Amino acid sequence: MNSIKNCAGKPVLLKMVAIIQENKEYLGEVDRLIGDGDHGMNMNKGFTMFCDQIREKDIDFTEGLNDLGNLLFSQIGGFMGPVYGALFMGMAETGEKFDIIDLYNFAAMLDAGLKNLQEVVQASVGEKTLIDTLMPANEAVQKAAKDGSSFAKALRDMKAAAEAGRDFTKGLAAKFGRSSRLGERSRGVPDTGSVSCCLILCAMADGIIEQLGE
Image (tube, rainbow, N blue to C red; front, side, top):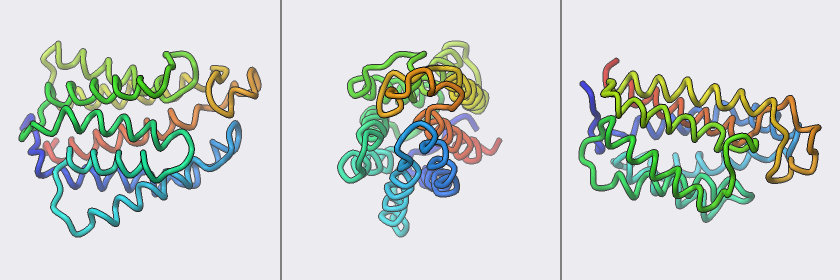
């Protein structure tokens, strides 16, 4: 199988929730090193609220992404609520017309999410933000679609690129947010947004791969 049904995507959403809940403390620890320490708490709050909303509902994958994005955008404080809101709502807007999500449709969704996010975050690769994770992940998916790879292989490539992007931020000096005040002292610690973005993308990939039966 090389696609999933949009209407069968709730387990993917729940996998995304679980990874944030499981890593709440870790995200807080990373954020405390160069930020204000509330990233794990805020992300866990938003994703848990979303989980409570959909627990008893039948919900499409893209409908869930839109609901999650709206919730994070409107109810979660700090910078990351609007950032992830833009990403998920951008993906959902492009994906809502798809009954089936295959590699090409997923590639279109991820690219749209990135472009929507870039209207909020005026950052480029190398500036120690979640763009350092998301951009290479998106590039890996676009390349896989162009090369005619299987959906599962594309998702594994996306995970590898996201992890490499996350690790890349350790050697960078922050230029955005609270951590930018540390300048050179922010080197040696990964960007917290890049870490949470990697967790989310990997959970999303694993959830879809499970639905593909691979």
